[in-house]
Length: 260
Ligand SMILES: Nc1ncnc2c1ncn2[C@@H]1O[C@H](COP(=O)(O)OP(=O)(O)OP(=O)(O)O)[C@@H](O)[C@H]1O
Image: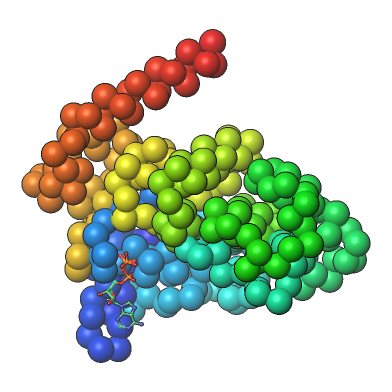
């Protein structure tokens, strides 16, 4: 469990990016942070792995204040995936994925073998292994980014708009693959997006923020769609809320039917 307790981030220029945040992020589930541009989603995410330090309040992982853990140790247990994947351009796909195991001193052969296994897990053809990032499509690059973040088998994964740079059809494929993978791995995932459809599709819980860094609602997708907390959330869900709701329950029915 990741806990934010009265967390505020004020940048040196006075911008309050996150304001008095109390939030409990459950282990083993997908929690989505959603809201308009500049509402503090990325800042919130980065306070978990100490890329950003809070101005006030405490972030804890399983009860332990993250300030007590030095950043390299902390980050070994936290995978991080960003938009545009952030791959090393001069390393092959397989070596990009094996980066962290290499750093941890695992033998190269073993790390590469594991990287190939991960490629399969995230749906990448093994023929891609020796290519360089520039020789891949945007969707393939994102898959490499996810595989790389999983390589050290961290219990926590932070994902900042990981699927935003690809077209809607590819994005849908990545989301499906991601849900399948998460059902297997049960990581604690914190996922940032500004796309409410993506939030509803992926999140077990959704935290809706507004500009100024205030959390306006924290709920399951069902609760959010059925009872948006006020005009801001209602407007953010948009006029198509009824359609989204139908689609959401329709997908849920389909999944349950498939489970039977
Ligand atoms: N290093 C910084 N110095 C000053 N202000 C910053 C810094 N980083 C972010 N901000 C400001 O803090 C606020 C929140 O930014 P943040 O990136 O957390 O929002 P976001 O919700 O992730 O936005 P987006 O969806 O556009 O990425 C914004 O007003 C932003 O301009």
